Image 1 (cartoon, rainbow over the protein chains, first blue to last red):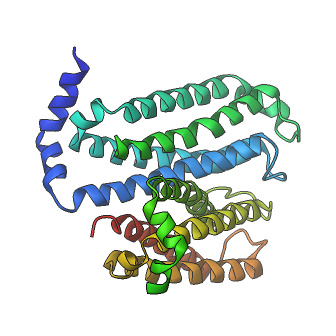
Image 2: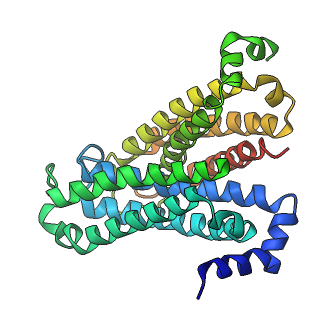
Length: 162
Length: 152
């Protein structure tokens, strides 16, 4: 199936038309999107700093994960839900937008990085829960994440200028 | 505001094609720290994350994230404001944002003071929990009003 057709279909769907033509849906969804992405990236940032041993020194990594990661996921759900609705309203424009393609690609990379971390270093977290020196693969994951998420925000902002 | 608008900094920012978008992006970056710091610190008071951790110092890390975010977004925000001071002054969303911001700051400070006294208890006092919820609402309102500045 042609992806461009899917975007065209989203664009022409009643939902897409409604958001595009209403004077308030788009700004409101944008505000919700920002609230979600701030929650997501800010709390990811804090968890990454914990993996690097820079903050939350008295908190075990597993406990920091249990406290912070649900906040990360909530932010992700809010940001992706509002993001999908925003996308529907300008799907055809976004499809051809290079910044949008970069944004999705970097998000996929960030997701893959998180997956590798969870299946790798984090599975043996009990062995390094208290350690000031976290294992190298946890540090690599944290550093990659610290690069990816600002890049996602940057690409997202850049979408408005293409 | 007229002085800010007419200042040389204001006109430099206005005339450069890059200044305002760059500041906007930096403002967004610093907002992520502010919002998530405020969120985690207040959720902590509400007993949602870190429920079984009493006095582990995690709130200090959340506060630090919040304060860095606040400082950064204040600087980038003020710079952006000097580029479009008059436009903002007349913008109703900007006025709402400033009102919500003052309320959010008062809430943040009082939650912080109150929390310092109520620490080392598993369950925070009801009033403090209400204040934390109010604080989150005020920050959310600030964010929404801020986003609407571009649309009204």
